[in-house]
Amino acid sequence: MDVGCLKARGRIVKAIRDFFDKEGFFEVETPILVKAPDPCFSNEVLETKVKFKKGIKRAFLIPSPEIFIKRLLANSSFERVFEITRAFRNNEEVGRYHLLEFTILEWYRKGKDYISILKDCEMLINFIYQSVFEKTVFSYQGKEIDLKRPWMRVKVSEAFEKFAGVNLDEFLEEEIARKIIEKKGYQIGKETTWEEMFNQILLNEIEPRLAEMNKPVFLMDYPLRVGAMAKGKDKKYVERFELYIGGMEIANAFSELTDIKEQKERFEKELEERKERRMKLFDYDRQFLKNLGKIEKLGGVALGVDRLVMLFTNKGDINKTVSFGYREIFG
Amino acid sequence: MVMISTADFKKGAAIIFKGEPCLIEDFTFVSPGKGSAFYRTKLRNLKDGQVSSFTFKSGEKVEEAEVGVRELQYLYNDRDKYYFMNPKTFEQMELEAGGVGDFKDFIKGGEVYQIYVWEGKPVSLRPPPKVELKVVEAGPGAKGDTATAATKVVTLETGHKVNVPLFIKENDKVVVNTETGEYVSRA
Image (cartoon, each protein chain N blue to C red):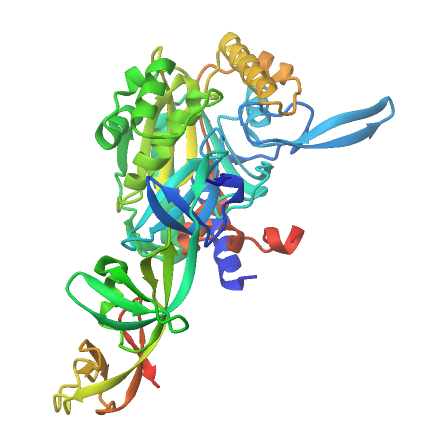
C-alpha cells in the first residue's frame, strides 16, 4: 500500500468534484448492478445472480455507467451531470494498465458535442494538476509532459497516413486491410477481425509515436466500425476521440449517438459479435433505447481515474494507485 | 520448432522475432478502446542488445528460441571478435563484438561471464549488473573546485574512465553499475 499515492488520489478526486461544481455540473449516482449491461465492449462482463420473490435473475456489473446516466438525462431536466463510480471489466488477465474493478469518471453535456468535451478535458486536467501539485509540467516515467493548452489534435486518418503510411479510407475495406497487414508482416488468421487489424497498426505504429509527444494528444474521428456509441461524422467516421497522455489512453469521448434506430442496429451487431466469439449473451436495455429519443444532442466522456493517478504520481503499474491491488485481493 | 502462444509469454523467455533471437524483457496485457486483447512486450535482440517493443495480438504464435546460458572465461579480443574459453573443456569460442555491446568498457581478461548461446554459437554477453574493478590511475583531483560536486576522473584497469569521489586512490577497487556506467561505491 502506497500511502503517498493514496493521499494524492484523494486530492485528485476532490479536485475533480471541485472542478465540476465550479462548472455547474450536478453529481449523480447510477446503478452498478444491472440487468442489461452495455454490450459495446469485447471485455467480458461480470455476472451474478439476484434472488427475487419470482425467482432468480441474472444480473451484471456495469462495464461503464453510460447507459444509466443517459437514462437519467433523458428523464430529467439536468443539463450537465458527472459521476465518479466503479466499473468492472473482466479481461481474464492482469496487466499494468487494467484493473478488474476500476474508477471511472463520466460527464455529459446536453446540447453539446465532443469538441466541448475536448475543451473540458483540457480544463479539468489542468485544474486538477494545478490545484493538487501547483504546476503545469510534470514528468511521467522519465518523460516530461507539458499540460499547457491547447493540446494536440490528430485525426486517426492523419495518424495512419503519417506514422504508418496507410490510407485509412482504403484500410476500411476488409480485404484491403488484410493485404496491408500481411504486407507489413503482422500475423493474421482467418478469425482475425478488422478491429484487431486496426489495433495492430494503432498499437505498434501509432501509439508509440503518441507516447513521444511532450503534450497530451487527442486522437480524433474514429472509423465507424470502432464507433461504439458515437454519432456519425460522415458515412465512414464517427465523432469520437481518445485522449492520450504519456502514451497512455486516459479518456474516450463521443458526440453521443441519439438515433434510436442506429443505436439498436449497433447493439444487435455487438451482440451478434459476442455470439460469434462465444461470449456471454444478454438482452440490451430496451428502456434505454426508448429514452434515447428524448435527447437531441449530447456530448459525453469516460475517463479512467486510476490512470490519471498513475500519471500524476508517476506509477508504472495501475495496481499501485489503489488501496488494494489485484495481488492483495485475489493473490 | 516449438511454437509458443502469447499466453505462454513470461519474462526471460526467448523467442525468434523477425528472424532474430530475442529475450522477452517485459510484457503486459493491454486492451485498447473497445477491447480486443493484446500483449505489449519489450524485446531485447540477443545479437546486438537492441531493445524494441512490439504488441502482439492475443493468441499469436511465435517460435521459441532455444537459448542457453554458458559460463565462459574471457581471453582476449581483436577488432571484430571476443574470444572465450569453456573453463571445463578448454574449448575456445568466439563472439562478435556487437554481442558484447557497451560492456566492452568493463570486460576483463580471465574473468568468467555468462554468455547466451543460440544454435550452438555464442550470441551475446549477459552483463552482470555491477562489476568490481581496480583503479590504475587516479589524479589528485582539481583543488578548490568544489562546484562540480567534488568528483574526479580515474582510469580503471580495463582502460575505461569513470567519475568517482575525491577520496578514491590508485589501486582502490570500485564498484560500477554496468547499465548506467556510473560509480556506485568503493569495494
